[in-house]
Image (cartoon, rainbow, N blue to C red; front, side, top):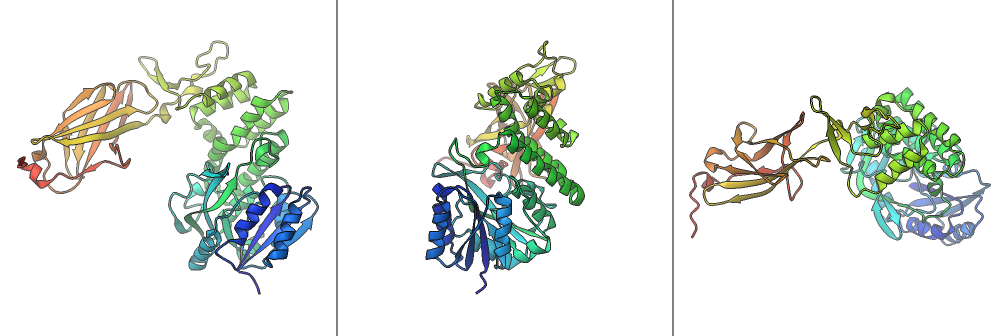
Length: 480
């Protein structure tokens, strides 16, 4: 019988975790599967574990090859796959029981070429958010595409997905040798797919190995590892430049956010000649769009500036500064006639280093923080209490104005201040006719900064909305 789904599992020296992985595949609620375990020249007892599963469960098949890496191992598994659908799992990870039933069922209903879902990190037996995937799967979307939802550039792993096998073969998808082989393939599949299904469920548990482990992830700050990562980045950028150039900026921004961290970690830990790492870092940055580099957050721009100049000691100081803060660093004003807003980081206006002020410029990172914290009825009017401040600025906003709006009318309110961030206003309900909900608008001005927006609900977090009872508009609330 031809199975509905083929799952390819490359295995190399993951014996401590392999049983849990294969058990999770055997326990799938979608039972019509085959599991192709490819032993990539393991030197531990992982092969025996796979043999035991194959002996007990006819859905498991063991294939062996000399150690060529996870990419070639996956290719071998794909060549043996018979299923209508295709999936991948790594031997040290875990697949939740209903994952494949959910993904395959979605593809069968929509006709899309691939389905993808949310990921959690498996850490010390518990589950945590995957920071790589955290912004991707907030809501399910069926029959979509990466060019319609560019956030999918963050979905660059192959194992949280199910593919139609005829789509895989038609596009000629194949894993390259080396590490980070899944990133180019995942991005190519997203672009080449006619449509993609994003499910809201968690479909994969990605293990974070203990410190000192030998996984690729644990060795990601080693020079050869970083060189392989750069090769993967170049491969994706070349493909995007040819097939989907509108995705380049988003991908570059992700590289700056996630991948450069490992370059910085390598430079921090370096005890030998840092020259090769610095050369690699400069080559890495040369691959990225200059406007994306210029638009990076100010603290990251400072790190990149120090990297370009080869200032390793200062870079370590800035990295220590970043890690040592529980909250984001504050932003401070400088200048009177023309006020600039700069990150309060090490080496700002250091005469020795002479780092340009624009490296520290954080004006574009500031945002209004305004929320309604209380709205009470006194018997004759309403008393509003709100918080108004500027994120990362530890100063009182001197000019604040408030108004209520129902989308048709705008009712200005008289504002009183209470403390550094408190704002009070009295609302006469007789001024608020009609049954439409009201929102509280705010305008804040500070040293050349002007922000406008709607107050958030202090408890619920969404935009604060308020409906005025009819009895209060006539002030007929009589205590009994």
